[in-house]
Figure 1 (tube, helix red, strand yellow):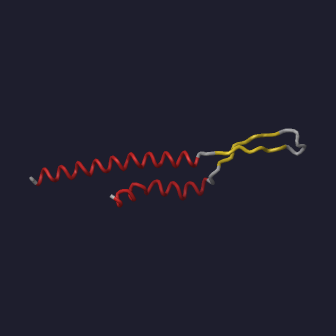
Figure 2: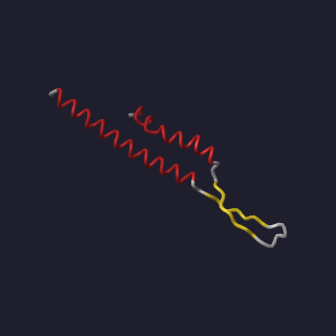
Figure 3: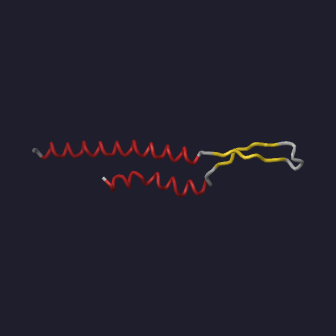
Length: 84
């Protein structure tokens, strides 16, 4: 084949792979956001025990979520490219 045709096919396939990785990375980051936004409801009782207050508390510690899951999510494209 012609050099130009091979070069064009190479660039086209590379653009296709980058587009796929961008889509997968967006889905992965959205999943991480859904995981870290989960909350649980706890009940707080007053000292006399008559009134109850319900509050939502996050299940994930913000520091843990930011340092581990977000770091993994931001390096996912590099991991996928290395795998490909």
